[in-house]
Image 1 (tube, rainbow, N blue to C red):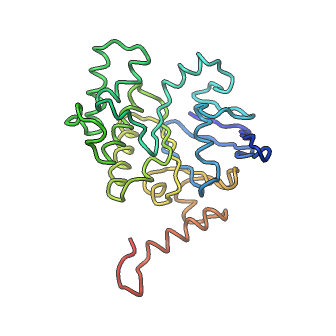
Image 2 (cartoon, rainbow, N blue to C red):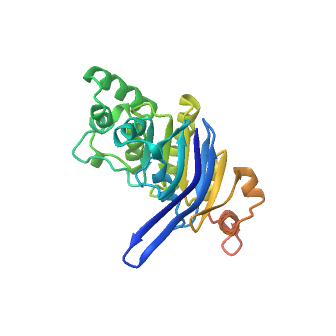
Image 3 (tube, helix red, strand yellow):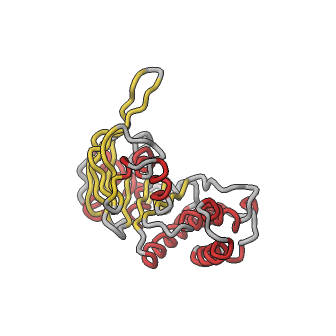
Length: 259
């Protein structure tokens, strides 16, 4: 579904050029739940934003469904983006709009008729288990419910790809679990390809089939999630696994589970 070839991204700053992504090569199969982990500043969110050209690559190619999106005109890109949903960490909902209006927004922009918008919004809100909040405003929702609205909005145009940019980072553990269960259910029912960017290794371990590790703008390790966890090779993955093992172990001083 997604093939990234020799992707580079350089930002120009007052201090000179900063290369954030360095020769990224990656393949993500159709229907997979694929995780990308890395510490803050590693370049993972920039890579995600390059996938739908919210950030323009400096060089390289990004194929989605066999089409190189780096070669598309603005009008062609708008059409392709309809099939690429994105979920943000901070929800990015319109506070002055109801849940219905937030989910309906991309459909209105796409020019769908009112009747179809109504049917589609109700269908998606049922999928994310928010049918009873259809006329609520974001201020009346919990963090988990806001993220469910964000997921519903991302699914409105029936995308082939769903990009998740740290979607659970601001949620408590119980809510994170419910959102991950929802994403697994969506993947199972809709066969949608999910790319999940996170610095939470337990999230990748729970939901992802395959994963990549990004370090200083480079992919330093990739494979099945199990293989990376059982035999980490890069410095970043070793640190992540050591941290996870530490906090998953019993605290010998207090006799309590750390998590």
